[in-house]
Image (tube, rainbow, N blue to C red):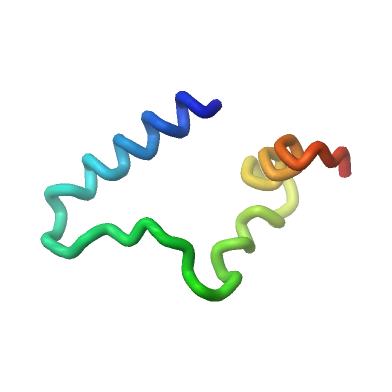
Length: 57
């Protein structure tokens, strides 16, 4: 999974490189709006969160 994430990240950065002269933001937003996708029922992000946290529910 880690290797896949690394290559996916590189692909995204390379695909955005030619789109704009503005720098790509690589930081989390200061609010919690980015967390909602990790709590959607039946989503892959929810399953990953539970897997990596060691939780079974």
